Length: 315
Figure 1 (cartoon, rainbow, N blue to C red):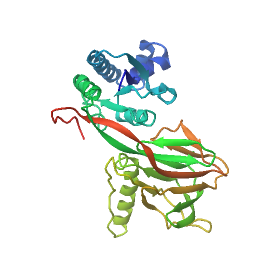
Figure 2: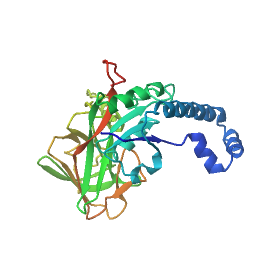
Figure 3: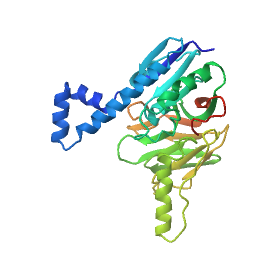
Figure 4: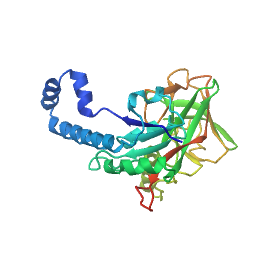
C-alpha cells in the first residue's frame, strides 16, 4: 500500500534568526543586546537536530524518503502511497493534516521538555515502530474531523483546529449569519468555528471570557465545551457581538450538526478574511459579495496513535 516516507520538519528559531541576520555571530549579537538568551536558542536547536538524526536512522526501512520543509507543504502533492512523519510542534501536525488527505500521519515530539505534544504522541526512538506498524497495516489511527469552508466562487479552505471569519484588522466585521433556521445581521470581532481537536484551543478563550463576565455580574458561566477529535459536529462562537440599529446578537454560539452548515454573507466593503489554524498569511478574502458556507469536511485527518501489542503512543 505504501511506497514512500514523507518527513515534514521546520526550521528552528535559531535557523530563522541566522537567516534574518546572515550569520550566527550577528544573530547572537542582536539577541543578547536585546536582552534575549541566545543559549536557549542554541539548546533548542541542538535538541531538535538530535531528534532529526534519531528519526532519520529509524526510518531506514527500505523505502525512499522525501524531506519536506513546512513552508512547502501547501504546494506539495501528497500521494496515495505516502506515509507522513511530522517532526515538530503540534501546529506542524495541524498544518500538514489539511493537505495530506487520507494519508496516515505520525506526529513525533522532538522536544518533550518544551512541547506539550497533544498531537505528537510518538517519541523519536519510537518512530520506527510506528512506521513499521503502518506498513504492516497494524497501526490504529484516529479519524479527526476537519472543518471546511467553501465560497460562492468555488474557493475552499480546510481547518484542523479552527476557522476565523472576520476583519483583517481590529475593526468590527459586518456580515449576515444563518445558523439553523435563524438569520440575522451582525457586527462583531469575528466568528470562530472549531473542530473537536480545536475545542480546547482558541475558542475556549471565548468561553472563558463569557464565563468570567457572567460571574462578574452575578451569574454562573460555563468555561468551555470540549468535543472528541472524531465528533462530527463543529462548534462556533461569535466574538464580542455588538447590538445596534443594524446588528443583533441572538446567535452567539452553537453547534453545526453533521450535514448542516453555518452560512455567513459578508457585508464588509474591504478587509474581510477567512483563515484557518491561526495562519493569517494563508487566507481567503471575505468582503462584499462573498458568501461562506462552513461544515464538517468529508475529509478526515488520520493520526496514528497506536502500534501492535496494545501499546498506546498517546490519546
